Amino acid sequence: MRQAQPAHRRPTQGNQTLTLTGLRFNANLGILDHEKTTPQPIQVDAELNLGPQPLEPHDDDIKHVLDYRKVRQIIIDECQREHLNLLESMIGKLAHRLLQLPGVRGVRVKIVKLEIFQDCEVAIRAETGEW
Image: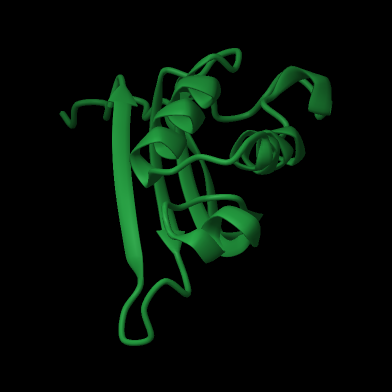
């Protein structure tokens, strides 16, 4: 007699990461004289660990998830808030702000200065919280 196969259950949850990549805008950043007077282009990549989330939300309402439009605007606002001398200062402030968003357990952020050198880009990456 053949044994019955166990029923495969569909998973109901999975770990979720919200990712924004290639976000480009101007920011006041740097120690050089021209950097102190003229905004320069930067690029920001961000990953937000949202931890276990339902694979199929109970409804299709934006009010019940982390709205990536708001995350995008927070990144821009935080990076344009004030002139900062160091990438390290900017990324620290940004990572801290993103970690305060509801449901965010961890943050990975990368900021790139796109035009500081002709032969390369300069970037810094930070990771904080749970991963």
